[in-house]
Each structure stands twice: as C-alpha cells, then as structure tokens.
Image (cartoon, rainbow, N blue to C red):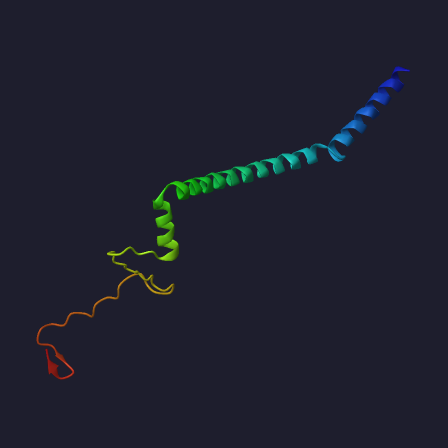
Length: 117
C-alpha cells in the first residue's frame, strides 16, 4: 500500500513540474513578462523626462520673454534693429576640411616661362 502512495505522489510531482515548466503561466511566461515590464518601465521613464522638459518649456514661454525671443530667433530668423546678422555656410559634405597647400616657393631670379621674377 505504501508503494502505491509513493507512486501516486511521484506521478503528481512529475505532473506539477510539467505544468510549471511548459503550461500557461509557467516559468517561461513569467520571464517574458518580467522583460516586458522592464522595457515598459524604461520607456515610461524616458517619456516622463520628455514631459518634464516640455513642461519646463511651457513654463518658460508663459513667464519669460527670453524663451519666446530665443524661439523667434531660431525658428523665424528674428533680428533686432541695430543688430548685424552673419550667416556662416557649412562646407559641402564632400569638401576637405583642410586648406589647400600654397604653391612651392621659387628662388629669386628663377625663370618661369621666359620671364624673370
């Protein structure tokens, strides 16, 4: 009789282990949910920081003229009377960032094309 009880307990243990490792709500699903929670928490943190920055921008725009002026300067090209505007063009993407070398120096009195310099 004790042998049958032990066999039933072993079979029950095997059945529970199979359910734990393979069925719905098992270890694999719990790990996947933990990863999803971590990813969502990171995303929420990033969005919260962005919202705080936007709230600070709104407060600056409501309370101060400096933020409005800075936006007008960058976005609309505002130039106050009496200011001088300088525009700096960036070099094209394929251009070299170094200056070209000057031509080699010629000794005094050298003849170039029949002309003495």
